[in-house]
Image (tube, rainbow, N blue to C red; front, top):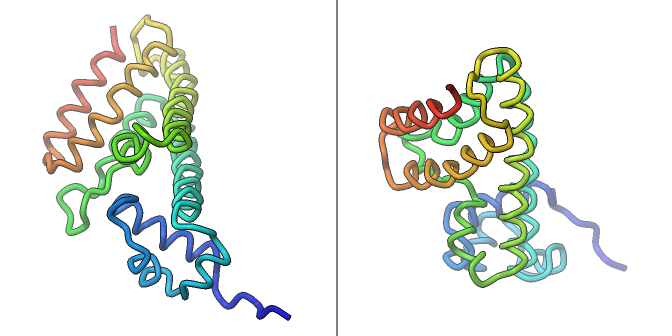
Length: 193
């Protein structure tokens, strides 16, 4: 008879996600994961499988949470302020004691996606999903007058998706919040005529 599980699986997954997010896949050892989750090696393997399986599960949990947050932020009114709040949230912890981790999807676009088709597919899905939630927010802004560009909302959403990784990299590289805000304001000039 097997022993009942004595740990919180979603919490262990969250802890593993934070390690992978901070250190990347290659930079994370099994020892790091065991220390972060408090699991034994046998419990980790029995619950999650391999390090790679745990990484994919953690990455998927991150992606789901990020999608919920983006959707929630972009539903707010007025649309321009909602879009700005979403992009500003990307570098909210700049100039704090916490390191700028960036977006885990963008981090993985650089680390694993070039040689891992499953990770590449997830990153591409995330960027497409971002375009999908930005498009109606931009259209709403065009309707409420807070965005005045006559360009199609889908094109403007693609422009913002194109800028998304750049802002993430700038934040991780150590740009100040003022420099990032200036870059964001410049980007937003393309949302007006």
